Each structure stands twice: as structure tokens, then as C-alpha cells.
Amino acid sequence: MSELHLTELQALAQQYLDLDADYLVLTIVGATKYPEIIINPRANIQEKIGYISHSYNEDLTLKAAPHIKIAKYEFVTAAQLRDYF
Image 1 (cartoon, one colour):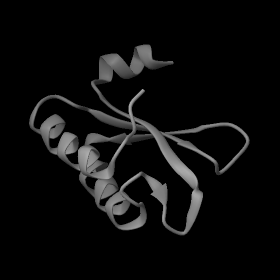
Image 2 (cartoon, rainbow, N blue to C red):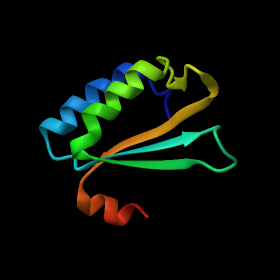
Image 3 (cartoon, one colour):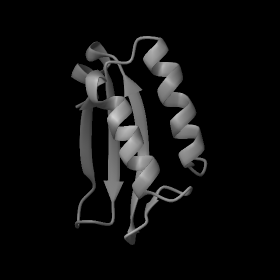
Image 4 (cartoon, rainbow, N blue to C red):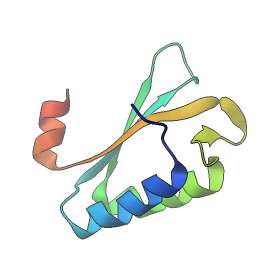
């Protein structure tokens, strides 16, 4: 997988909101022993992107705790989310 970047996430968020994304799924590593999966509904995607933009560095490490990182993000439809797990 290629290196993830904040600016790419911001650009993709707008593209997927203009299309058909129902959820933003984030995989966070470094906070606990196992990865944390966060599911944000469409109504919360813009607010979540705003939070990430403020709280995370360009390389998607958390500013306050750089050992915590967004390792993966995906924009999915409701049907794709059902198949996600």
C-alpha cells in the first residue's frame, strides 16, 4: 500500500460525498494492541474530516500522540459496509 496523506483524504472526501459514499471507515493503529475501526455515517463525514484536518499531521499521525496513525481509510456504500465484515 502506498503512503497515505491528509491532503488526499480531504480531496477524496469531497469526491465521495458528491457521489454515493454512505460511510467513511477509518482504521487507527498505535492506540491499542489491536487496530481500531471507526465507522462514520455520511452525515458526519465532513465533521470527521474537519477533526482529522485539525488533529492529524500530513502523514496521518495524530499530532498529540504521533505513535497513533490512520493506517487505512475507505469510503463505502451501505451495501459495501455490510460486506466489509
